[in-house]
Length: 152
Image (cartoon, rainbow, N blue to C red; front, side, top):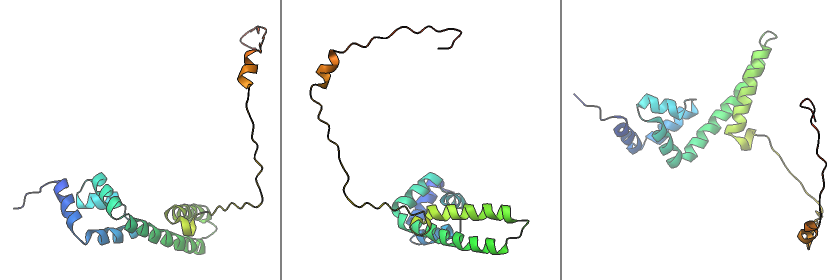
């Protein structure tokens, strides 16, 4: 009978397996999260996520791009299958997938902002000389304000 060495020992086994990164990529690209994968393997979610994000961030980003593409394609399927009765919920489903795609693959599906500039930008240079000296000679007088019934 094998004795379970605990979650940290399982994490070390998972990390040392050369196939782990590919398996995680596949599961991520099918829609699972790192937390769900960690829970399924019985390893600490935070430590597992930290390790994967430090060691395999490129694979993680690639998996999110695969998901973004799937979401983008699914929006067309949802729109094509929409009926007058389902148009409200379909619009919400499409919108959420578009938002997710725009975050997971900004280059392809994100909003593009382009700033163009042509010509010269005028600049203003103010020379502050003797301003502090001039301010010292000024006196600002103010009359007291009477407050009635809490109003000014």
